[in-house]
Amino acid sequence: MNKIYLDNNATTAVKKEVLDAMLPYFCEQFGNPSSVHWAGRMVSGAIEKAREQVADLMNCSPAEVIFLSCGSEGDNHAIKGTAEALKHKGNHIITTAVEHPAVLETCAALEKDGFEVTYLKVDKDGMLDLQDLESAITDKTILISVMWANNEMGNIYPIKEIGEIAKKHKVRFHTDAVQAAGKIPLDVRDANVDIAVISGHKIGAPKGVAAMYLKRGTKIGRFMHGGHQERNRRAGTHNVPGIVGLGVACELARTHLEENYSYVRKLRDKLEQGILSSIPEVKLNGHPNPDMRLPNTLNVSFNYIEGESLLLFFDMKGIAASSGSACTSGSLEPSHVMGAMGVEIVLAHSSTRFSLGADNTEEEIDFVLQELPPIVQRLREMSPLYNRTDPAPLTCDECRMVTITVPH
Amino acid sequence: MYTDKVMDHFSNPRNVGEIENANGVGEVGNASCGDIMKIYLQVEDNIIKDVKFKTFGCGAAIATSSMVTEMAIGKTIEEALILTNQAVAEALDGLPPAKMHCSNLAADALHEAIKDYKEKHSA
Ligand SMILES: Cc1ncc(COP(=O)(O)O)c(C=O)c1O
Ligand code: FES
Image 1 (cartoon, each protein chain N blue to C red):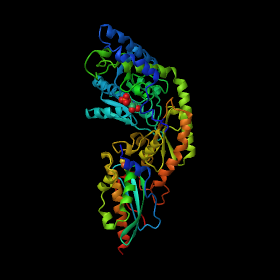
Image 2 (image 1 turned 90 degrees about the vertical axis):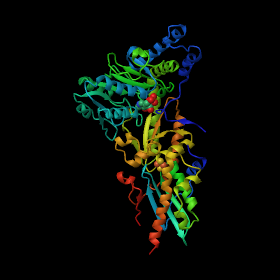
Image 3 (image 1 turned 45 degrees about the horizontal axis):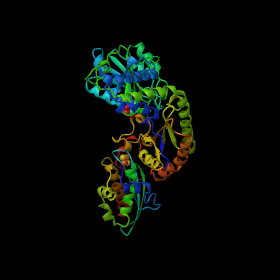
Image 4 (image 1 turned 90 degrees about the horizontal axis):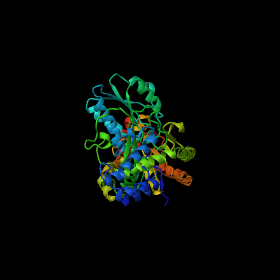
């Protein structure tokens, strides 16, 4: 069976060049870069080279790059560290309703400690109203945290405009750039960003390594206490192979950015148009203008069917995708991103994300377009909501009820 | 995550569809995740002759729907009324803990359909 991986926003395969660059740093060049002896000296250069590669991707200075263990750590550090460093100035944080849980849960934790958080609403296309953002700023606001691009529907947020607003009001600006890295250009200087976070496993480096851009002079509380690594900004012995891999992945991302953008975009657009034209009653989630979404991401709802069953049928054909359905969430709540966009409950249940990568081929997209319609039709035939004559029972509150009266 | 039996019933669900002149219909929604199941019954001489289902839900919900229809066919309505979600889950060699609530749908929908049959035929 063909294996077709369309879940690159969840994680990516490590690139061959990345792995090759990492391998010498396990058995041969194994030293601790903080050591003064030959073994340490052998690897400290590698860390500094990776730092330059990461800095080049984001357009910052290498001294402004801190290596971390994952994107979630970066978001936690940015938000909690800012709260700690600036609590004398205020206790208000502005973020959005569609952030990754690494941001939302961190903000929720701070709310318990007396911070106030504004969660900006998005419209039905998942976009922010920048006037809302500007008017939410008070003299207590210490941080604005808005993701560069969304992981579920791929919307790209106007980071440069937000950076200007933040600068005008002298508020610190953090952006979770985990999904944007490697897919669209990131220029933290141009966008007036103070803190940006990227994660290795989304761009062809291994899991468990990430980086943060911390603008020079930005005061931030420590997150990981311990040794003096990363100029006292993040304790913990360096994950040397991981950092080397992240560096190479950033360099590849930068040098192939335009080429990958247009290649992946062409495949995504083909998948998008193919699905919308061959299957009735499909809703596109996210911004209707494909320029406003990451080039690799497509999120659609196949009305009347539940996402987990869809994913299981895709899986039987070797197709890997993901869903915003309550049934796949563990918490039995549908995706908060679909909820924030006001997507109806049944459509949120059926939301499906395809996230492509440069390894996908046109043949794979053709195969998916050929397999999808019969799977959708089969599940629709099984659904009590499809071709229904009596009113659909699932409207908001009613979907929570246990017994539905059947009209006779 | 699912047993082979669950995957078998999920990928080849038995008794999917509607019964045109069903004499009992039950429909329930899942309080936890918002899914729905509808059961159609054909009862003759107190015996369930035919059952069909339609389900909007996860793999476990579809598999338990399919299993409950297989288990109910041929039973008297009294026997069918004591069929529990636990029994349905066991017949599928178990469900992941997070999916146990899905099997409630199946037993509840069957019981609702029987209740509907009784109401219609008590007069
Ligand atoms: C937007 C976004 N932020 C943060 C993260 C967390 O990154 P990590 O998995 O490296 O902790 C992810 C990954 O799921 C993400 O998509
Ligand atoms: S029906 Fe939603 S989790 Fe099973």
